[in-house]
Image 1: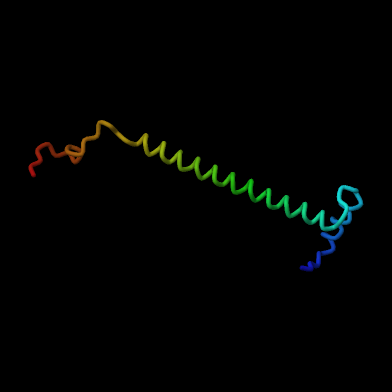
Image 2: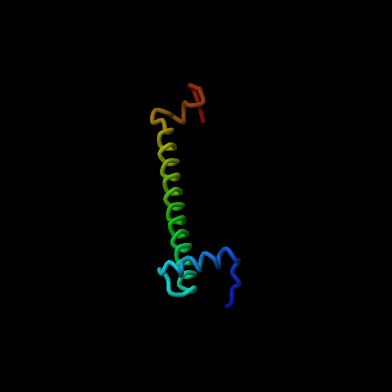
Length: 83
């Protein structure tokens, strides 16, 4: 695969090579791709945590709305119901 990099990306790669941290352009590109992958993994993990927290909070709120004194047979206000 051949990729044509925009000038600003080429300049970034060159700066990284000049810094001595990387020995080739492919090392710079691989580091960037790995960083992107790590960032996406972190994002997915955090998203799952937030979804789980939201479900737990919804369950807590729904559980608090339950009234143990509520009686289905008299909740409609009728005192004498015959079936």
